[in-house]
Image 1: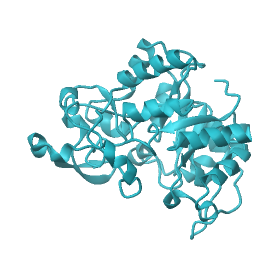
Image 2: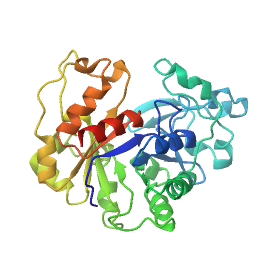
Image 3: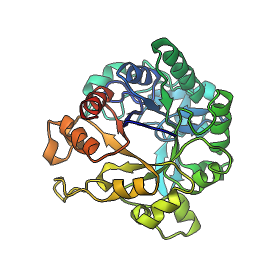
Image 4: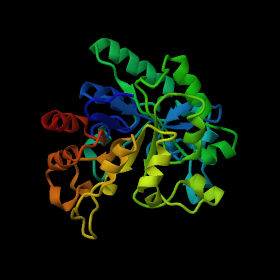
Length: 327
């Protein structure tokens, strides 16, 4: 895929301004100039892909207030962590559609709680329909950047995400290396398998700590930190076209949140033929390094100056402004 200037990826939509993973958040992100919108994908009991950051939905919906679903509350082990709540795979799509979205972090974004209870949980197909409609309306192609969540877990219960994702994308005309799509995952084996069945661009996600859960299951001792070496980046380039990385892997922080010197990761990834997309850029001081408190624009300027190829942002308007200013 040819990308000539850094892209702005709307992280869960315009989630700084609307509850995340709603059509309203995606639509606003497009209006604010996003190049791609990012739906995290989980599945329903009847195998329909929907947009939620997690399959446990008590933080991002009003499911707990639905007396008819009280008995669905349960405890599961997801990627090695014990979680209690309500899980999408225990609901049909029809049932999911009776549940409404709500702001995930109201303590940081109190302005968004006025939208609680207004928006449905969208399906992948509804998101694609929105993107195609808006692209035609504004005369600019908007891409989608889906992330498949908890692949090993969903596969273990017979609800694999990859097959319905590819089927939906292909049915909607997304084909080839230049299609406006990136498929991302924190796991590795599923991306490697996808690389043999599709030529759509793939993105290996890399975090500052921990390891891919499929590595845990298979006994692979490597961590995410091991995957950013020159040799491992070359291996990633055998199956993926980009890395989506925690921005602290590019510019680390000390123990009080002050920035240290940049690493060689951007240069190393580019040398391996990989694009570099960094996450997550947000306006709130809670998320900013101490060097840029009250100045999220300065953080964008720093990272764009380091030659990254894209940013995941909750505040698309700021990201677009700074991208255009620094390009």
